[in-house]
Length: 369
Image (cartoon, rainbow, N blue to C red; front, side, top):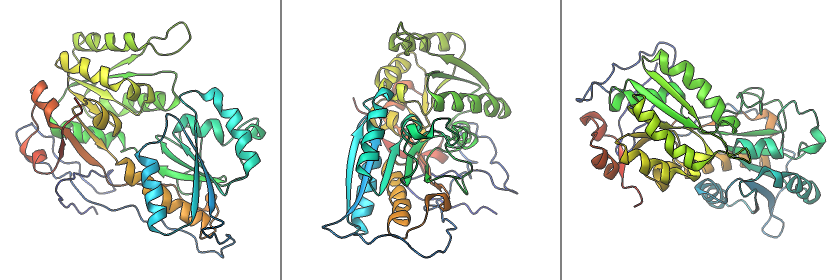
């Protein structure tokens, strides 16, 4: 049974449970929208075991090395804030891949040499570059014998990073952050009865390919048409930003009514140009992650908060460092709270206003100009 509650200013959607009836489709004119609930961080059924963890002190703190993809984010801010609030002595050293996985082998060697208490990895590409897939043919090329914790990984199971959410099967656990695709599209349909959705994506990125494959299944099941546009590559085999922008007009000409921005680091880096081009074309944009809403001009999205995501990761870190629980015995933490974020200035420019049921519960912001 699912109990639905309302809380302003956040709107929270949860995956369907057995016996849950999907809310009636909105016509864009108000209720019904009983798709709102508030849940705190998921409760994890954790094993009870004797701790073999060392006790850290301010003079001898827990040493954590974090490897990030494009510099620090609000996830790391939340991670630090939670550990500090819990008065856990820690030292967090950040290594930045700077958008280039070729930097990973040197970082792997550095981590092996320094032997921290915990390795923290940000994103799918970073995680697979540092700790490797679960069945890596060359495990010595990765960090395997130091406890690991991943964040901002969209599909850890499909990316072959873990065996299951309940038991990862390796010296690694993490935090899942992406709202299920069917829940995302329930939010999209609640906003307006879109019929045709376009997705532009970086086909060189594993998480983007996985997400598009899920869209190909879910979107037609929900009575919508999906238009898929991989970004053409340049001479170096990398997505071409200019070609990406040209695909917006192509999608519009093909009948797209909405542009979907998935968990795609390339799109995040170029989100300002992408969303501005979409606005010029009169094309609404939906984002599955926070960054295009916070840092560019996406119109609306159903997202988990990066800061809260970092705090949940810190709870996982505490269980490993302080309680001495092996990462393989820790289920992957899941945020079950998702915020419907609407950038009201973009809504005004596009001219597509949300129904009253969403106005009552959504978190309205103003995009950066």
